[in-house]
Length: 249
Image 1 (cartoon, helix red, strand yellow):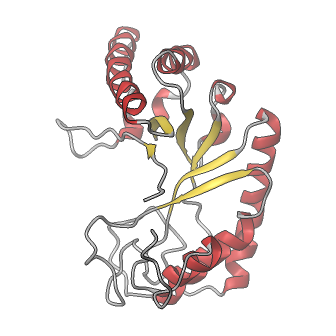
Image 2 (cartoon, helix red, strand yellow):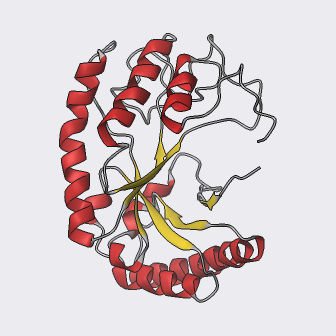
């Protein structure tokens, strides 16, 4: 179908579902770190070998493992081991508030950011207010790209079609009324703020569901499918409209 793929493994905690991946390592002793990184090396090498075998174009070596990121020596070892088994490009997916703290971006091909930046404190901001909120984040991302001489890749970004979703874009469990317009405006503000910047390598949007029935005007979740935000995506990526012949894809 002409699609290219980034393989992006996520960790979840099977034995303690009250904690999230960014908390892994917060209470580790030194012996725990050795055990964990040895285990993680085996885990990510498995996916590196898989990606190489299947011709996957891009691999993300880790996702939102915030409490581990200060362990630069261990992460550099992991990246070197992955490169011994995989020939595609590499990134790491840092949470938006952590990307500036990582000291090993030089070992990767892209600075990966999960860009769920809080935008305004308004439930129904206008497009101009959303774009204004992006300005300091754009400046910070540019500084990061210049500092490391690496392009920035939004390894994840998305907005629910819900009232006030721009305030805490990561908050997927909050109960909010459907607001298709806010989602579309948040998509448009993102594109107009960053898409043509020379330091931006690309954007991975969260999320287009595998189930084609997901989405539509009554849905308050992240998918743009069947919503005005889908038209924003089509415009910026120059995708054909429903009336166009898309059989070639």
